[in-house]
Image: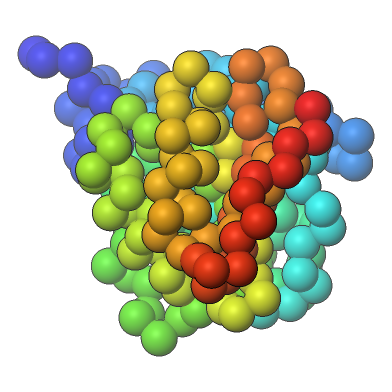
Length: 211
């Protein structure tokens, strides 16, 4: 069988769930992972860095975890903002089911785990969070980001975490060319956390880094 990636819609690899613990300054979560889903058997360092870096989420409205995997970002954000509606979106059906299971176990009743086509087209997001699937390749990744960042409400922020050696700086350049203001919020463990905000291209002053 060819090697499958975590962005496969229906993973064919046999299920073998494992539990992992996410330890953050404000909470500890027990989460179930599975084969065929991103970061099987562990907490991805980029995801951990993102969650340790994020400012408090909007207290209400619709928030998005793009590429939710088994749900560490969506569930953490939902518990930090219990009055918000957190959409946890992934094309991987096993990931969506796992995220829903983990959200129930964590008491994050405000998480809606969904496939992309299950998100109503009129929903716009007050914030977007993502450890995006960079291994899709540049063109498919750009298509995914353009689609979902295009649904970010005016004044909203998207927070992305990307490995430096997997093209974080080239992604910044593309985002700016596509009309976004981008700030490098943090660099650690080989990752960059990016704050992406809609803005006219003419207003961009460049990227400001804080290491």
